[in-house]
Image (cartoon, rainbow, N blue to C red; front, side, top):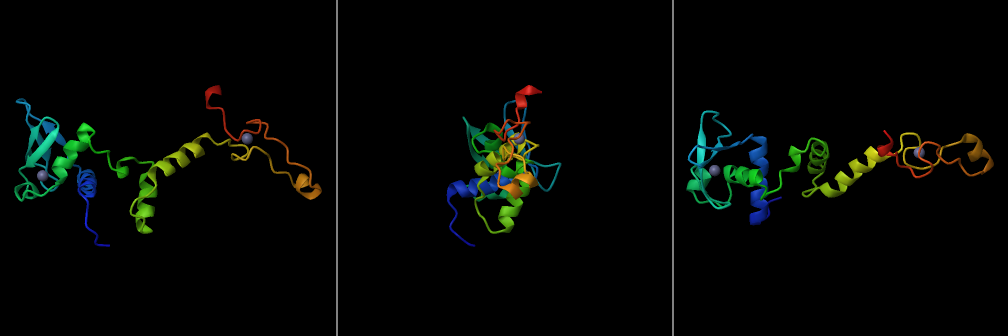
Length: 161
Ligand SMILES: [Zn+2]
Ligand SMILES: [Zn+2]
C-alpha cells in the first residue's frame, strides 16, 4: 500500500487529519492566522499566510519544511481551496468507511451522493419501479398495474408537499 504520494494526495490526507483532529482556524486582531493543535487544546500554531497561500507553520512539520501539515490544510479547507474531507459529510461517512475497509482508495463519492439523492426522491409506494407488484398479474402474465402514487414515474413529487 506504500505508493509515492502526489502533492495533492499529501494535502488531501493532511485535510483528513485536520478534520479528525478537529483543527480549528483562528484569526487574531492583527489579522494573523492561527491553527489549534490537535493534541494540546491550549496550544496554537501560527500560520505564515500571504494572500491565500499558507507558506509556513510553526508546527514540527512546518519547521521541517514539509509540503503539507494539517494546520495549513485546515486553513485551505477553511478558505475553500481544498474540498472538505468526505468524512465531514455525515451522509457519506459510512460509505467512505465501508469503501476504505474494502480497500477502495478513492470511493466514488459523486456517484454515492447521486445514489443518496435517488433514494430520497424514490416513490415510497413502488420503491422507484413505477409499477405495483401483483400476485394475480404474475400468475396470469398480465402487466402489473401502474403505481397510483407516482403515476409510473417512480419518483415522488417533492413539490406537492
Ligand atoms: Zn502545521
Ligand atoms: Zn410509485
